[in-house]
Length: 313
Image 1 (tube, rainbow, N blue to C red):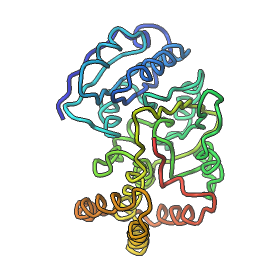
Image 2 (cartoon, helix red, strand yellow; image 1 turned 30 degrees about the vertical axis):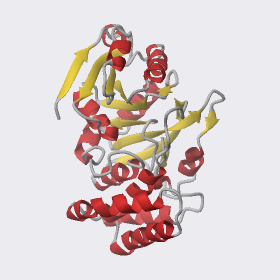
Image 3 (tube, rainbow, N blue to C red; image 1 turned 60 degrees about the horizontal axis):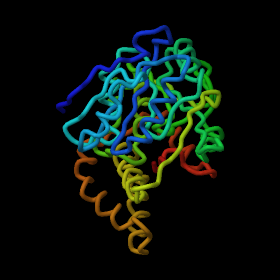
Image 4 (tube, one colour; image 1 turned 90 degrees about the vertical axis):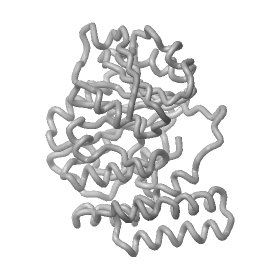
C-alpha cells in the first residue's frame, strides 16, 4: 500500500506529555468533524502524538489540517482503506500503545494516561475497551451496558471485565499485541470489524477488557451518510465463517438468508456480498482455540445482545 505522509508541527511530539500512547484517527471527507476531534485531542493533558489516516479523494482535508497543533503525521493511502487505516497508523506509531478515534470521536482528559498505566501494569493486556459517551449530553452508548454485563469470568491478571467486543473508535491497544494478531482483517474492511480482532487477540493469548473508568466521547455525524447496516450483517456472518465451528457459521448464513427472503432492509445486499466473499473467508478459515470458543459461546447466550456483532458508525 503506497502512502504519502506529512510530518506535522505536533505539540504532542515537541512538548512534555505522556509519550507512551499515540492516537490514531481515520477520516474520510468530514473536515469539520475532524478539526473538532483534533482540537479536543490538542487540549488533552497527555498531549499525545496524533496520526491521521485520510481516506479522502481530494486535498481538502490535507489543506484544512496542515499546521494543526495536534497533528504529528498525516497518512494518505492511495485508496480508501476503511478500518484498515488503523493498521497503517499502528505500523507508523512509535509508542508502545495506540488509542483509536474516528473523526467524530475523541478522548476525555486523563483517560489515555489511565489506559497507559493499566497497560504498563498488566503485560498480558492487549486491548482496553472504553466507556463510550454519545452526543453533547454524554449519554451512555448502549454497548457500555452489554460490555459491563459480560458473562466471561474475571481474570486475575487483567483489569476490568473480560470481553470479546469493543467499539473501534473507543479502545486502546498494545501495539505489539495488535500487530501480533494481524490487526483488522482486510476481508471485512469496515462495519462490525471489531469482533474478529478481539477473537484473534484472545487466540494469541492477549487479554481484552472493558474498563469503564476510561471515557471516549462520540458525536456521530449523520449528514451525508446513508447508513451501512448491511456491512455489519455481512461481517458478522463472515466472522463466524472465519473462526467459529460449522454449525455456528451455517446458522448465521441461514439467518441472513431468511432475512433476505423476508426482504428485511439491507439483508439482500448483505447476503450477496457475503456470498461474494465466502470463498476467501473459507480459504482463511482458522478455528478459535477451545478456551476462546468457549468464551464466544457464553457470549452467544448473552441476553442483552452480542457485543461481537459490532456497531454501525
